[in-house]
Image 1 (tube, rainbow, N blue to C red):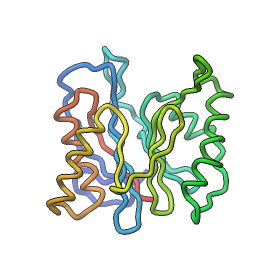
Image 2: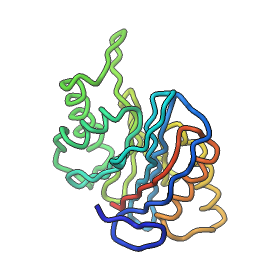
Image 3: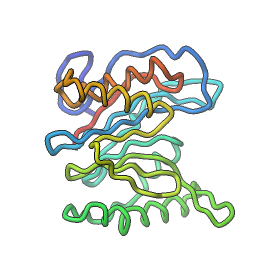
Length: 207
């Protein structure tokens, strides 16, 4: 994978130094997506935690697959299924929301169920939270498989989402940072300062 190491420019990723996690937290992750100038970007942190112990995952929580960018939280098992087992239906960029609801989400539900990840309680099926980007469009998918396409052009999932969204909103409002990857990384870094469940390295992919 191509990366950017502390200012060294390569093609795909931004990787910044480790941010110390001050406390333990039962939740983890900050995935942040942004649409800018017709391109979609999704970035994420590297926290892995069971609520008491923490690790830094060696595999980014954001990845490309068959024309999509996906960034996930909730469970590494869910992310592994999405990255390695999911068969992506043919993308129809002219009708992105219809594609998500009618094609991609049913395939995700089926795959998560077949591989034993999804849960059904009181006739309600649940999965996990993740972002999907393609064709300049950004979607948030939540545990009940609802799909959100925000008017703001940015969205976030994970325990650090509110902090990252607030930081990104301020950066955009004041036009402080121009580079989309830097916008995402700096917003997640701010999230890590306020949320124990977020830490670097940080990765960003462009769609």
